[in-house]
Amino acid sequence: MAFTRATGKHRGPSRLARRSAGMATVATLATTGVIGTLASPALAADAEAPSPEDTGLTQVVAVDTVADEVADQAAAQKEEAARAAAQAKAAAEAKRKAEARVKAAREAKERAAREAERRRLNSFQLPVAGSYVSTAYQAGGAQWSSGSHTGIDFHAASGTSVVAVGSGTVVEAGWGGAYGNNVVIRMNDGTYTQYGHLSSIGVSVGQRVIPGQQIGRAGSTGNSTGPHLHFEARTTADYGSDINPLAYLRARGVTV
Image 1 (cartoon, rainbow, N blue to C red):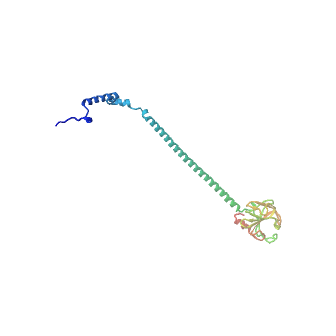
Image 2 (cartoon, rainbow, N blue to C red):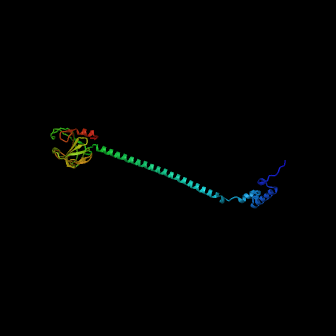
Image 3 (cartoon, one colour):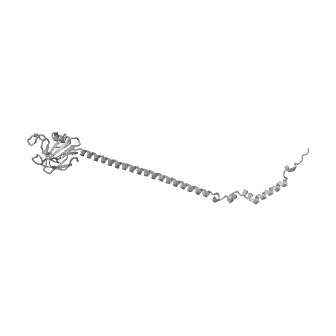
């Protein structure tokens, strides 16, 4: 059986053709520098390695560095702002507490002052400062129309200041017959006090008075044997409703 070489377009190249093609390829590689590159890979790498500027690495590093600095600065500013806000809040709280303490102290002082004033206005004192009783209550004698003394007499020289024993409203101020010039005060507790034989009167009906306020001056007007103050405590403004003036004053804290 005989074999024949394939012909047509499927026939392989001849050895001469393959050799010619190989030589052409080598020449081409030599011309383009590929062979040199393959022969000296280190040199080729050094010759063709791109610079950092060519790759853009330097620019990337610079941008990252700036971004980090900006971020750090922003963080520092945020921390500083938070610290300033905390300090401002602490200062505001300290101020609020200080103001609260001042307000509390002021209110306490005002309450104490009001309480002191309330006690003062509700207090009682002698009608003649530093005086003493010269004639007792219900002492007998012909000089009194009722047969007995309806009040007590306080020793006082003519012109000596006479004051209200407590807070109240003047209901009588003028001539009182045997009492001479006299003042009657309705006290805040509903009782009445009367001051007789005055040389002068310093208040008028309807006027409010407080403890220690001068209402007149001691004298010897009316049925009197000499300068003194006749003092009465009463349940009404009228004569005949008298009560023990010593007990009245002592019950209200007055030493007499």
